[in-house]
Structure formats: C-alpha cells, structure tokens
Image (cartoon, rainbow, N blue to C red; front, side, top):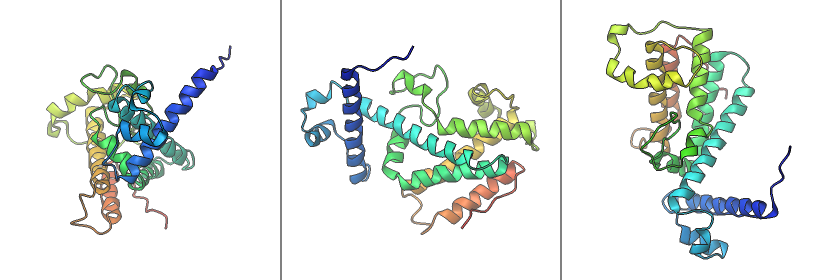
Amino acid sequence: MTTTASRRDRQRAATEAEIKDVARRQLVESGGTELSLRGIAREMGMTAPGLYRYFDNLGALSAAMCHDYLDEVSARITAALDAAGTDVSARLHVAIRTFRDWAVGHPAEFGLLFRSKGPGPVAFPGQTGTSWTDDCTHSPSFAMLFLELFAAMWQERPFELPDAEHLPHDVVEQLDGLRRLVATELPDGAVWVFAHAWVRLYSVIALEVLGQLGFMFTDVEPYFEAELHAVVHTMGLEYVPREA
C-alpha cells in the first residue's frame, strides 16, 4: 500500500531542504569556513530557536549535509559507471576521475566531509565513537562503490599479489572490515592493495582540494594521473589516458 506524506510532513521536508540549501550557499560563499544556525535563520527570516525544530544543533545540520553530499557524489559516480561499459579498467579510471572532478568542483562541500568527525566515506556496521547519527552508516558511499568495483575486478581479472610474508600483518588485520563489506572473498594481499591504492589516490585529491599542493604544482592533474597510472599498474591493469 502506498503511503502519502501528510501536508505537514511535506512542509517540514520542504523547510529542511531550504535550510540545507541556504547552509550550502553560505558554506560555498565563505569558502567552507563559515556555517552557523543563527546566520541561516536570519537569511530565512526565522529565529534560531525556530530552526532548532528542524535540526537540534549545528552538528546535526552538518551531518545531514554530509549525507546529501555523499549521496550526490555517489550518484555522479554511479551515472558515470553506467555510461562506461563493462571493461573493468575503464570503469576504475572513470570512477576515480569522476570523484576527483566532483571534489575539485565542490571544495567547500568536500571540506565539510573531510573535516567531519564521522565515519567518513564508508562506515562499518556497528562502528562507534563518532558524532554522526547512527543511520549515517547506511548512506550510499563512494568508498563502497570503489570497493565493490575492486572486488568485481578481482573476481574477473585477479592479479599477482605481494608475498604474504611482506605484508604489514598488523595493518591487514585491521582491514578485515573491508573484506566483510563485499560478497567476494578477497585474500589479504588484495585487501591490502585496495587499501593502499585508495589512500594513495584519495590523499592526492584531498590535498589538492584543500590547497596543500599549490607550493609544488600549478596544475595537480598531471601528478594525479601519474599516481593513477602507478596504482592501476599494481593491479595488473592498463592505464587509460583521459579523453581530451
């Protein structure tokens, strides 16, 4: 049976959406440095206490915005993958480039995600010790998109793994949560390769967006592409140059 939202529920949802729209605009206009419930309420012609009926505090609003941005970038990556065909190498290149394009184009939003004390791009079931709401762990995650893509790639095109004796076992043991997130059984070496690749590429993107590479590069993209080339090589894949 289809349940129709009441008029009151629709009005509340519309107001929450407007609050987040105003908050995003202020976040972007301030370069990601300013966000306050009082400032949002003033722009909307509301009182700060009135805003608390929708979000308990600034942390709750920030968490809701982070959910939206995770959903947004996940949808962007999913759409790019849908158009990329079935070749696993091409799909991997498209996915990470789409993520970088979104991050570079939305530095304030990425900054809010990056600075969050929550579980970040992916959360394990039952993860604790964060300030985000519990249901944040169910938010679509761009990290999970990459993990699932990697697992499918491993199943279709397994590659030579580092020797088990050379793996940092105290690190690999902590990565068991990644293995439990996908249906494909991944060996320790494969989990390590994924984690190492993800941290390597994500770090370049984060440092670029946060302006921490400007003292070395006027254009970070060639360096990112060089890192991508090196990463896919460790997975036995051919590097796919970006189309002009």
